[in-house]
Length: 78
Image 1 (cartoon, rainbow, N blue to C red):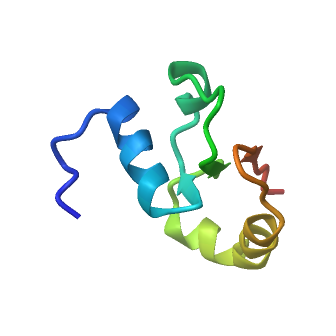
Image 2 (cartoon, helix red, strand yellow; image 1 turned 30 degrees about the vertical axis):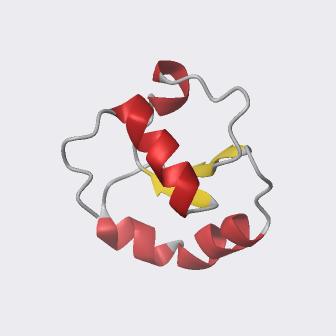
């Protein structure tokens, strides 16, 4: 989408114009960015391991389907 040069704060604003939700593995994003007043929902995954993410795809899909605007959900895989 040509967003490689956009910093985190502006990236969230740009994403908010195009998407309802975002999935990230950035564990510190909620502490680094101000989410007050945002409508972009976010799911934070506990790992960057594609193998582990694939195992939990149903849990991720369920969390995605139940998101509300501005909500931040941090998943914990067992």
